[in-house]
Image (tube, rainbow over all chains, first blue to last red; front, side, top):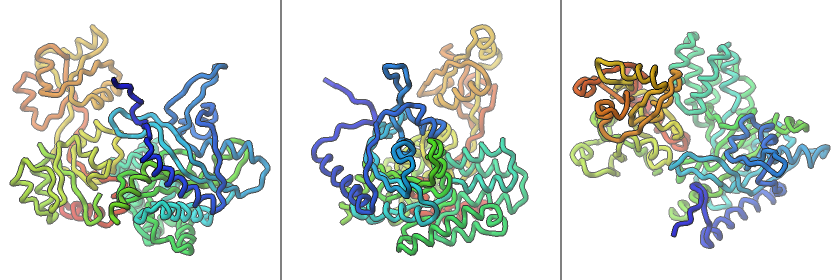
Amino acid sequence: MIHPIPAGTRDVLPDEMRELRTITAALGGAFERAGYGEVLTPALEYEEVLRTGDASAAGAGYRMFDEQGQVLALRSDMTIPIARLVATRFRGVEGPLRLSYSGHAYRAVAHGSGQQREFLQNGLELIGAEGAEAEAEVIALTLTALDEVGLARHRVGLGDGALYRTLLDGLDVPEERRGPLLDCLSQRDLVTLGRHVEQLGLEPGARDLLVRVPELRGGAEVLESADGPLGSSLAREALDGLRALIQALSERGMADRVILDLGLVLELSYYTGAVYEVYDPAVGFALGGGGRYDDLIGRFGDPRPACGVALDVQRVHIAQAAEERLQ
Amino acid sequence: MREARLTVAVPRGALFGDTLDLLDRLGVDTSEVRSNDRKLLFEDAGIVTMRPSDVPTYVEHGAADIGITGKDVLLEAPERDVYELLDLGYGRCEMVVAARSGDDALGEAQRRLGRVRVGTKYPRIAERHFAETGRQAEIVAVKGSVELAPLTGLVDGIVDLTATGRTLSENGLEVVEEIVTCTARLIANPVAHKLKADRIDALVERIRGGRG
């Protein structure tokens, strides 16, 4: 007889569980030693809370009514619940706060896509700290925590979530033309992006900048090639921010483990500055991601700058197993 | 994903010949691929061959770093998270709405029954096209020769890909609307796009240069 479980969910048996526990313990231990205290929030939140954080409730796929008819949602992300927690439980407490978590989040999945409906995330949030130093701390800790798990070839891709929008602002691209451009960028469709840019009727220098920036990936030299006379006048803040972050990472000996990617865009709308993703050559998907979200906690009434990162434990496990096979 | 070099997902079928010609120009040895149509994996050349609609799946999961497939396939699988890097220009086809020549089956169904029935191998493209043009459509997914569906009365019209229109006219069908032009596209896995940026960029530059 077959008693199915929903697609994208899993039962975990002892052999796998032992390995997962080792990973979460290594990550959690590294975070704890760096001063990040672990917190736990409910898997169920009022939908309104998630909507306060993100207009699309961060893509929450499952809603239900409680006894009073209020709409509950299964969290699809850990950062919004933690923003709520900080604004309520730590109100008036002086920062910076260093928090970590390990918990499940939930998203709707397309049939047959192999995506996870329920996924375990380990992550951290650095709250009340501005600037490149804070971002460098989060990125460096992410890299070393994954070292402790046993990964060796992982890298962090680093971009700025506001960069392309800033360029469009600076070039006076009309509001109604920006949506399609930004959609193409987040869907990674550079062919259609190029066609939309052609139709804007910009001068050649501006047109090249909009086409070229999403393709720019690599080391610090990438910033120089975006930083022509036009790029620097339009996106000075974003480029300087990334430059300062690379500098802070190189002081930590981490700069060669970071890949700048000026086309990087994350789907969540609350990122305001630096964004990053974690890659390992053994896994075709990002192991995790994060960024700076300076407005999010303010939406819950306690404005504080913040940045963080979330790792998908199951994908980290795949990378770890591949690394062991290599050795 | 292998460390050493790029693994390319190559579509068998209509795009196969042009794709192998492109790889030849890029200095990949495709002689074994051309001479053996049963074998699927060619490790020496870094080539895996598959049906075009599987290319985005292999590339999204990183089983191939880059791949070549038709825009029609990408439009039909929008949830696949891959970079679309280049329009390769070849394999040009039109996605069209077609119906029986001589009568207005689609228009009549629309007027009298309030909806049209449409047979297709591309249910998502068809659904989107009719929604965007404000018409109610009942999409009937078929796998094989879709030209048969309107001739037997299964549907009022079809949405299908056509290069020359010959198969349509030989079956007494005609194009009533053009939806979108589809060509071959170069796609890349998002992780390979960062970790193998040098090799992917070099490839893209060579293809662009070769065309210019």
